[in-house]
Image 1: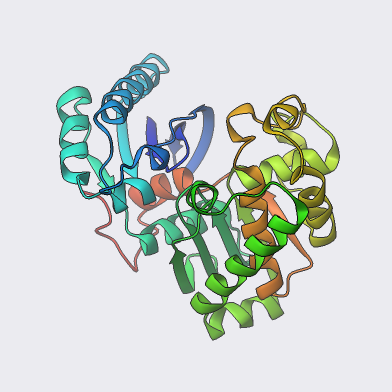
Image 2: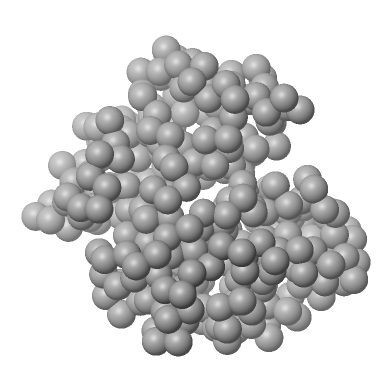
Length: 309
């Protein structure tokens, strides 16, 4: 059967259309739109009315596109920004009334587990997923998860709180991020760091992989599986931190909607790698979209089988 899942992230709206056949998932098409729900959180913690309308329209377009692609079922979930919003129920009600889709608002731990399930393989020991509003760090092997944490530390969240205009700013924000990461890590994460490889998920990873290789940001065949070294990451931060956003946007490696927040995402990644003592991390194009479908159709989420409605 052909199916689709739409994920409302803090920074972007994404959709995966896939075929499910004989216990296997075949990825067919991916779609992305820079929605920035987290940036639309008002001072009182509510998602703005304008963003609610935009989200309804965008999800509706994605749903129509999935049906055009032959999907017989479309699922919808939301992560950090919606999870944090004081009016998340009203936001989800508006989505349901407008699109007919009921949004599963994932907890931080569920988000972490689904990213791990979608991106890792049997040889992997850990995963880092850097989003707009939160960062998930998971350790385990195959379907078994040893530890899963979600930190209130995302590229958009950090961008709004702490500007980075110089290399010195980047160092200061990195120290802040390291403190947050250190507070959340468990002994299981440390064990995973010592015993196996790690994989990274999200636009921070794919953009950095493109920058380091000096290739366009959409050359996925060269980005997926790329081993990103910590030294190269530090050089990328030093290169981009003092650069105006307009100049970053002009780089072929830069996804235009990510130019303003990319250094903040890189700083979070550097903080994670230092606290986990990682010299390199493998970049993945896969993540919680795949994990959601695997959990839903293959029953591969035994630790939390009722994550969906």
